[in-house]
Length: 320
Image 1 (cartoon, rainbow, N blue to C red):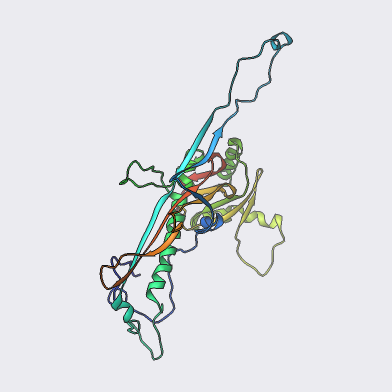
Image 2: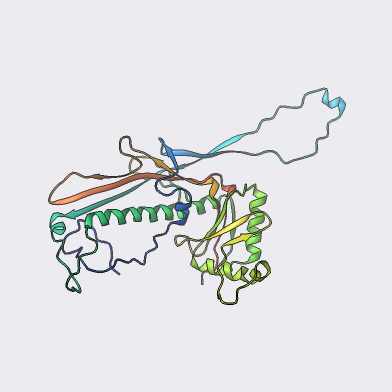
């Protein structure tokens, strides 16, 4: 498969071909789509933003207070709070197409047949559109796998915290190389319930390997829940009901093969930091330094994920 090129696109490194365009790279971004995409979500004017303020009650007990003791007020107590935060990070792409490349729109490489035309018809527009798709892929990967880093200076990048790192400080199970099993899933459901998860809109995200494992774990139950047709083969488990919540199953190609994530979508949103007068994810011309059309796409995006106890994960699963 062809690789991306560095620098300005020209007649020779971006030749024109006739034919339908295909890519084997994943382009669906299910988590990002569920929480609003690149056009929905929240806005911030600070690169650090609150993901929630947490507090806990003491363990429940039965009071033992006599009438005599009640004549004196007990010692004062208070419920403490702790703020949790995340950061936005920069997503930045540049597109540069030489004038000569744009002028050579009728020059075709590869197999040529009478009447064929180059696809795409407009190289610059196509490159901009594909770069937006690249940003969406990068955002999806970051929202799942991002490792938190708070900037300490202009030369230190912010990095937004992803869902799997969040769960590592909350409800998570280390499978230690074992196969995903029903008992493991049930243990995670129970741990999430015991941790105080709200179970708003629960979705399990997994890669292709674990998706097939989940179907294999539950497919034998299908005959007990619904009549089986006699002219259809195969199974696709898309929802699980357990003791605590209903759970949608979502294949996400950007999930690590050895992990699954259970996320409360009701508590998650993208956060955009706009540049005054420009917007939150914008395309603009760059200064010309020669015979090329040069543009940049710029945005600052982070993940509002809510508190860790709302979500759960299993990591270290067997992957083959």
